[in-house]
Amino acid sequence: MIKSMTAFATASCTRDALTVELTVRSYNSRYLDFSIHLPESCQPFEEDIKKIMGRFHSRGRIEIRMNLTDTSEEQDLFEVDEVKARSYFKALKQVQESLGLSEEIGLDTVLGARQVIVPAKRQVDEVLLKQVLCEAAETAAKDLDRMRKKEGENLFQDLNTRLDWIEGQMKEIEIQAGSVPGTYKLRLEERLAALTADADRIDPVRLAQEVAVLADKSDVSEEVVRIHSHLKMFREIMDADESQGRKLNFLIQEFNREFNTIGSKAGNARLSHGVVDLKSELEKIREQVQNIE
Image (cartoon, rainbow, N blue to C red):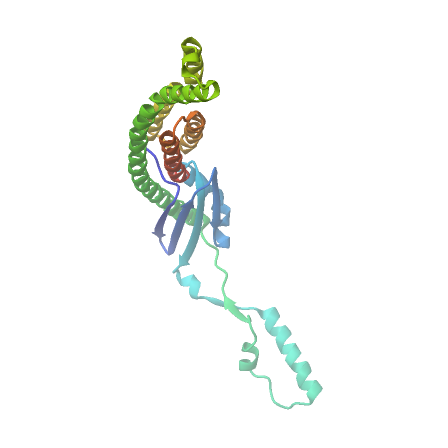
């Protein structure tokens, strides 16, 4: 079964007062790599997230963003930064004395300083946080895997259709290739006749030898056999239990090599045009294969 490398998933998990929400996107990549954006309190668990994702995915760039919500009562507590408050009050006194002001410095004025009253720092239960985060990551990894398989099914159908077209086109290629020796013979006869100005002087034995040599050079039967073998292997790889994008990409290169060889041996315009159409379709397959894990 083939899997796409492009997909999107979300997941959330709540335990006690902690809620973790994950957004996961995956893109094409030659390897498995990550771009993870976590709150500071969750950064120690980044490797745990990578291990969880790695159990379900072998290739692709996976981007993870997380939001942490804490609804505990302690979140509503505040504390005073006494050092900052004293320093600010001292500065105000200096201004008062310097300018000879008589107004008293009130509480409202001191509280007007930034960051004098701040949210109280709460010690998060790291065991609970890791549990919630890993559970959300596992859910997201499974959902992402499901989405990649679903997209892989679409790729499977598209690739099968294109492979069927190539198989049909190869039948036409074989027909056209079979007429190449006759075409070479006709051309050779015409050239010899033009050179000798007397067709009766053409040695039929020598002509047959030359045609045989040209026919051997233009024979594409080996390339055709290999292409059919590649088509069979391509389908087998797509039907395999594990996604094998790298192997499919390698087969694309083998297809291209055989098509180029047939093109270089082409003896007529229809055969050349057929090879061009094959290479055009192969490029579309190559683009699709880049999305496969």
